[in-house]
Length: 378
Image (cartoon, rainbow, N blue to C red; front, top):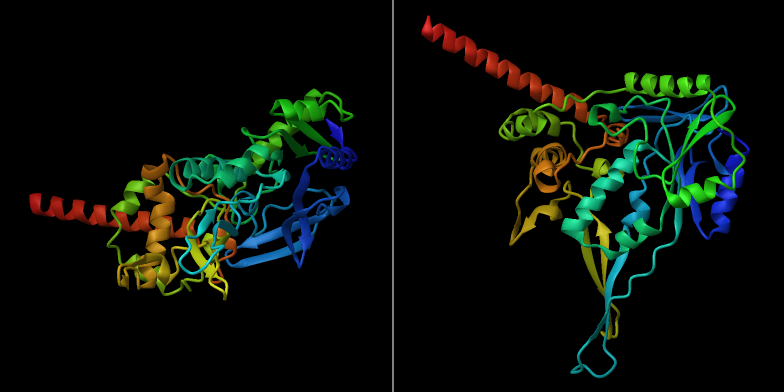
């Protein structure tokens, strides 16, 4: 156990070790990730209220540092930046001279991620698989290896959270250096790595009592039981594969704006685009990688045309990849149950509700088929 005052010391020790400490803070009426210089930058006394298409901050009592859930930002921004230069090409002589190509990616900052939730740790593990087999991104690997992670167990899930359904939370069980759980006035602290143990030794701490350990267990149980949403995952990949021709996709598309918000806030979406730039002299060119989205028309441009011109086909591509074909591609679901895609959808499309609707359609279809079979047999 550590006192709340030790948070300030922890942040200071990380900064002294050369880390840029990034964590939750309140900016522009939302909780976002930004640089932390002390515990005063944390959202003490703030919580967030989230529902489909709705997000609002509210004051809470008693005042705690981690009573909020998640904002629209994710740690993906620091591991897989929205915009990064891939290479530059320079011609030092005349127009007949060849270009000299230089791959000069900047060294990623040494970040300490402060306040990482269990679903976000799971998202990092998923991106590890993606980068290992698809992107082969040296920047990601370097940023990941240099990061120090101070996780926080979630004790008050939000209205759009469903990490318990995905087996990714609310308790942090992997891949952290230190993990905090906020109790009344103090914090449980767990050590998950050798660097974490070295830092922990420099904090003033005491052993948790039996009653505090039991309170911790009850908080984790309560959080798992009070998720705002639930997703039935049994047979879901097969269900979606068998629903490719369902008319429900067009029903969803009547609401979907194809704005790409869901992919921009998702902590595991990795689609990207590339842009080439040249200067006016024709002696220098650069290629940049930018976040992309399967909701844009240009994403499915093949040869001379776009193959997903309709909105329903683009939503279908996103949802079936996230919850179905991702399993075949990377051996896991592409969803961690953070609920961001529900909260930040302008029209409040709920992926858990849509998956449940497809399941009901399939059950009704199967029941009708069985009734017809019985009728023909009778």
